[in-house]
Amino acid sequence: MKARKKYDIQYPNMYAIPGYHKDADAFNRVQRGHQSVLVESLPSFTVTALVAGAYYPITMAITGVAWSIGAYLFQLGYADTNLDVKA
Image (cartoon, rainbow, N blue to C red):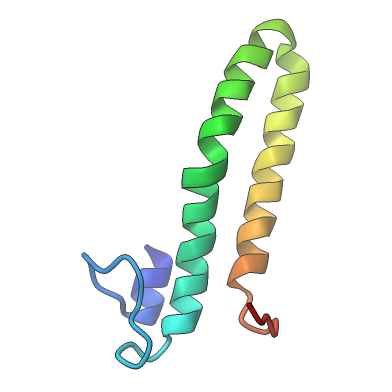
């Protein structure tokens, strides 16, 4: 929600359109990082955490905190427009 307000991208647009939206690249980086964590990483981590947590709850709690911090740092790095990334 913060990125949508900051870059003025209205719903239902999933991504900003380059050439139409002024800060399309910056918003799209934030959106792709967010989608990567939520859609690709979180489901497999959740299943693993539920199964492993039944046998090793303390270890899994520590792992969950570490994963959350890593996901946050990943999103910050993915959204950083100062990096010159060529695909």
